[in-house]
Length: 257
Image (cartoon, rainbow, N blue to C red; front, top):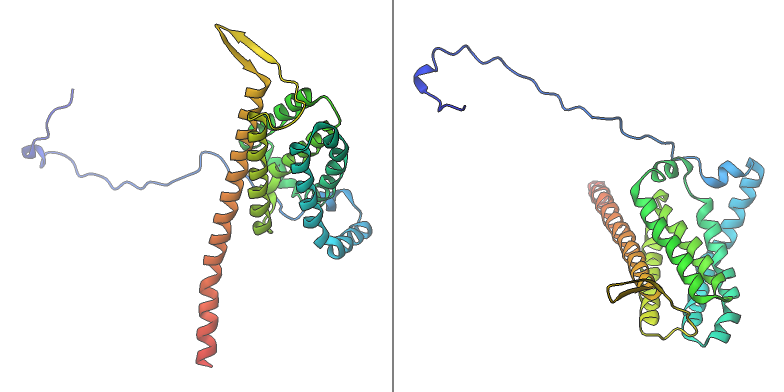
């Protein structure tokens, strides 16, 4: 029972001892070494230098090849099925070089932390569901492009391990999200040719078809890509704010001189 406090009893109470509180962690924060990358682990020093030199000389081609692959992806989804079957292998091949370049720079220790997080496995499950169901719906050579998109989207899960190239990552995430929205619209409006949809569940007069699952999964993937873009844009703004005081101090020093 809680009784009201009586001021007359204040002089009877003993003096309140001083208390000191310390904030401690319930568990240790994760630590990792940011230096080792996938290419430094797989390649020996001589081969690593050659690979780095190759990337410096041909790095400008990466975004160009990636852009061509995205254009062909749009073509495959919008043209008749016979043409899409011919273009799909070429589009899939153009997705491979950017994925190799990106995977080579993944930080191994950071990946170990991400693999134990929900933020990795939820997108991975959505991406794998997209691969399985869309492949069953297509049933032709266009499945090769679906596999390439699955690999590319899987690499995007590990973009958190990249501490640089935030502008390119934000731009690619926006483009990927836009293409996923276009794909979702083409499937929902029956624009994409020769799709073999089927009912997965029929209960109580309601049905759940492969079309319904695909639209929801693709919408989830587009939302995740927009989240990646939002995080990278915030990081770019934060980096600009951190650099701004340094520039101001440098300008003041020049004026003083």
